[in-house]
Amino acid sequence: MRPIDALVNSLPDARVLTDPDVIDSYARDRTFLEPGKPLGVVLAASRDDVVTTLRWASEHRVPVVPRGAGTGLAGASVAGDGAVILSLHKMTAIRELSPADEIAVVEPGVITADLDRAAREHGLMYAPDPSSYEISTIGGNLATNAGGLRCVKYGVTRDSALGLEVVLADGRILNTGRRTMKGVTGYDLTGLFVGSEGTLGVITAATVRLRRAPAAPPATFAAEFGSLRDAGAAVSAIMAAGCQPSLMELLDRASLEAIDDWRNIGLEATTQAMLIGQSDATDGQATAERMERICMENGASFVAVSSSPQETEELIGLRRMAYQAKERLGACLVEDVCVPRSVLPDMITAIEAAAARHGVKICTVAHAGDGNLHPVFIFEHGMVEPPPEVWAAADEVFTHALELGGTLTGEHGVGLLKQRWLAMESGPVAAEVQRGIKAVFDPLGILNPGKAI
Image 1 (tube, helix red, strand yellow):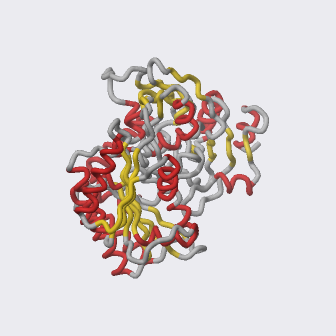
Image 2 (cartoon, one colour):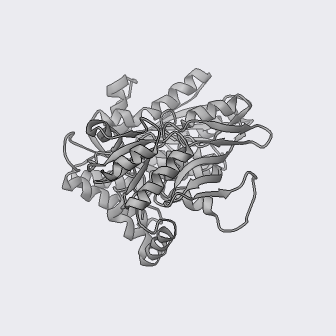
Image 3 (cartoon, helix red, strand yellow):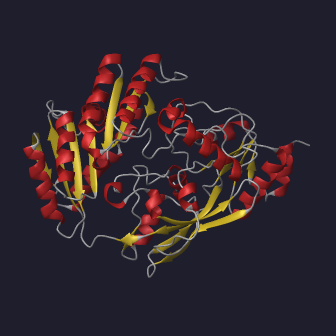
């Protein structure tokens, strides 16, 4: 009997899929990376399914690749040869939503936007807001410490994670954190698991913080600039002025052209960059108008403040469709360097220079308010991996980000794609410590091997 047959017999009917074509569809994420040949897929519907799977995997020394919706952009859920894919997308229960305590307890398959909508029925909101919020899951957001459009004001996923239910590699259940807003008992195990990309344990539930939703719709502005650097300078000026935007997004000319080719947004020939900002403060309209003035002072050729919720949704929708527009151009190597806000214009200049020097098409969008840039390197569809000039341009971008005091990834994670640069940032001591942590939680090395560290 094959080892996988014992797992099939241990779980309810139809929990384990072994058809090669079906397995292949679960073995990928949104990167160009080709998966190996996994043994099967477990469609976990409960914590008990996860426990059973991990006990079996430990007994048979089988690698396990946890997976949410597969929307990741770093290769963290790409499965290799001989692995079992542990899909959590069927665990969709919101176990509890407490308006009094402003918390929710959710399973990992809950769609991010669905949690936000459930919270808003009680005058609350779930603050983390990745661009893929309508399709990405809470479990995936936790695994990569996802950020998003609102993180400039409300922080990334880790800032909303209060406690976790985690199944360890040997099947034991670990509960971390708390239900309270404060707590310093023991080491911060919750923070350790958030962003660990499934290499330390499998999250089966999370207690997350909810926040009061703004009383009025946010005020939004859009500004057009003749240069990307001017747009970056406007961001720095807005943040230095203490405007505290709830959203601050930047799109370069290449990204705007991709959107215009797809949806015909009426892009002007002189527009090299667009800045979309938002304030959800009680004086949001006045703050948006103040940010409008700062944009004009920093070289904007046109600025408009939205006059209705519909206009606001159209502007934010423009930003959210950026990645799909780029995917139409070719295969995408998506990066997410993050630098201190004060050097954002320098990082933007470096990306433009790398594109020109290597003859590579780079489309850049950014969560500009917190210095998180997403340069997307476009290459021909069907290629097994990016050509040498793309890797060379990416090397320059990452090296410059680190020279500016930045980091290789602000929210997408390390996965497989950033392994080649990891040592540049972490150094030998940090690498040794992280390997030690991995050994404590996963001594057999079966949890998402080759990822994150």
